[in-house]
Image (cartoon, rainbow, N blue to C red):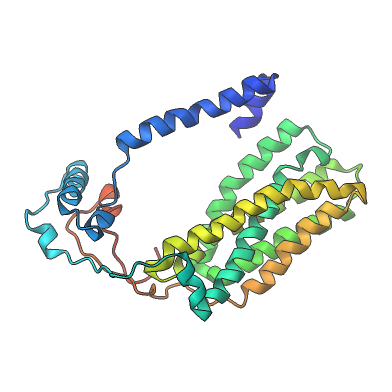
Amino acid sequence: MILPGIAYLTTNWRILQLVLFSPLVIVLLTMFCFLPESARWLMSQGRKEEALKELQRAAKVNKKSVPGDLLEKINVETSPNRKNMMDIFRVSYLRKLTLIMAFNWFAATFLFYGLSLNIGSFGLNIYLTQLIFGFIEIPANFAGLTLIQRFGRRICEAGFLVFGGASCLVAIAVPKDLPAVVTIIAMLGKFAATAACSTAHVYTAELYPTDLRQSGVGLNSMFARVAGILSPLVRLLEVYHYSVPMVVYGIIPMAAGGFCLLLPETLNVELQEITVIKNTINGPLGDQCCTEGTDNKS
């Protein structure tokens, strides 16, 4: 939402790039100073003293105390054979869900960038359209994360993708002399794409067992980045017909939504191979080191 305002006031694109890049430098410099390491990870690596320091830091912020023998009571299960991304493809059911979820991530991101980078063709002022598209992501994320707790991950992910794809196809049928209508329909598509992306993050993490969860999410995220690369290139197909890009943006998410129905539901289902670590530290910083729970409702 801030970006169109900055772009409107900064007419030189080189200066605009510098303005947009500057905050990232600040983040990179401050990240190493303030972000703590995961105490759970430190424990799994046998670095108990460093883990204790992080726990003490979390306890101090949350105004709690850490028992001196806390780490001796915590038993972190470690496997001598560390898992990697290739282990995902050695298990048949993991291969299946990875292929489907990768397609889902690809389709959701493909639709997201397809609409976001295509605002110049909707007929309204590009700065106003971008402002609207930025704002719509706020209710989209809240709606997505609320609906998946009521109706489940699978049906919501499929519904968001199908609805977003259908919005692109409907927008083709609207006459070009009605730019406001086209923008509203595209805005609904962006709403669905944003909700699909946020749902995919939650859904994917719940589908993989604990020791492969990080690799699974990272692998699927890679396909999302591929979609981000290919999405703007689809606009080149408009040399054949102006409607071809929107048809492609519409069909792929709808197909992914259909395949999504083949996945298992994970709402209120116990996470696979989860290791429960009980701790005595409560609070936002305590959660980062010792999360506990046997279901994925939270």
